[in-house]
Image 1 (cartoon, rainbow, N blue to C red):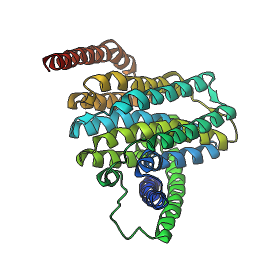
Image 2 (cartoon, helix red, strand yellow):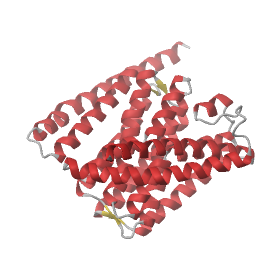
Image 3 (spheres, helix red, strand yellow):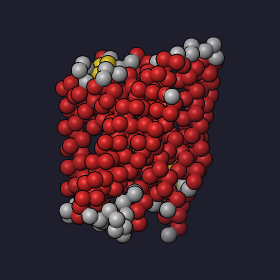
Length: 363
């Protein structure tokens, strides 16, 4: 029964997020908001609405481990799994603005979250600061967008907002989509969290592990669908931008609002504080050198991302069960796999830079 409840809750989250994105996106465009702003804000925020619904509901009910684990796990999942899978479908070319601005901001937000959680909890005033920062970030995006070119219709189609559809062009339909989407998100979040708690108890693992894995992957399904669709349609900037924007929103808005509605400060599980926070930060930092190697994520780099997500998940399972193989597994990852990956990426980066310099000299 709990499995059915979990699946229905997940379906409600995905459908609710899609309805919210479509309704709010069309409504914003109708009232003169530029498509670029819609793409940077409504779509990125809308696809993160399941994380928002689940984390806020969990924090309100005192299930803080799920609330925080969901955000940290989703950010890790977004980069390693979603970008990895999209890169396997087609190499992802990275926009310079993403490399120079968005990724550093994402790294800064990740650092801020780690710093706030260094004492084992996130205070209410720290949560308020995160909310203020997401408001400032959104305001800056809106100002910048007025100076830039608007994307074409194909860009918005890849993000799930059709400018040619007529059935959702009426005001009452758009409002209905927004309200219906929010209702589905609330119900879906409640059912998903309830089922996740039962899973944690029955499997003998912590709520933090469930939040980092099952819940995180489930609430990231809108990002999966949006990014894969954008990649298949050739809108690969959207695939990358959606992930980076969602990660920023998760840290600033989701954690911020969760901390504000929680009856007590957000207590960070020791396992998250000592390990998962740092994995999230390392994964964010790893985007810079990988993106700089030719300003793209090659297929083999996407495969590396996916392998590391599997390795990370295996570690969580072994650690939750206190398995005898955990020590050996950790040593293999730290002493062999990670160093080899870093060296390989460095060599490839140097070769590609030399190749570009050679082409420039020839011209």
